[in-house]
Length: 152
Image (cartoon, rainbow, N blue to C red; front, side, top):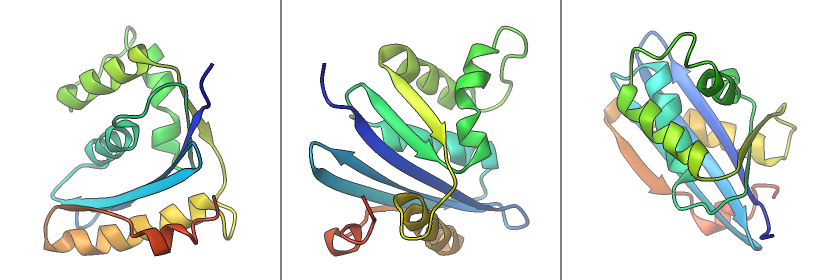
C-alpha cells in the first residue's frame, strides 16, 4: 500500500462582500507543496467545493485531508445523504467531488488549528487570499521559503 498523502486545507469567506480565499499544503513522500487562491462574487459553498477539488487535484489515493472548516468536514456526509436531499446548486462541482471520492480513498478529518501547525499556516494564507480576491480571481503556488514554515 502506498503512503498516504496528507493535505491541510483552510477556507476564508467574507459574506458581506461575497469574496473568499483558500489555501492548502500537501505533503507527499517528503515533498511539501502548497497553493493559495481566491475569487469574488462567489458563494461559500462554491468556494469550498473549488478549494476541495484544487487540493485533491492529481493526488493519488489514499488521501487524508485535515481542515478546521465545518462545511468542508461535512462533505462526506453530504455525499452519503444525497439520496435524501440532493444538492440543487453547484451541480458541476458536486459531480466532480462525487467522482473524486468514488475514484479513491479520501478521508476528511476535522481538527482545530494549533498555533504553528499546518492548519494555522493555511488559515493565515486563506485570509490573505480572501483579501486579495477583492481585486478578482487568482491562484498561485505558495513559495517554497514560506512552505518551510508550514509546520509539516
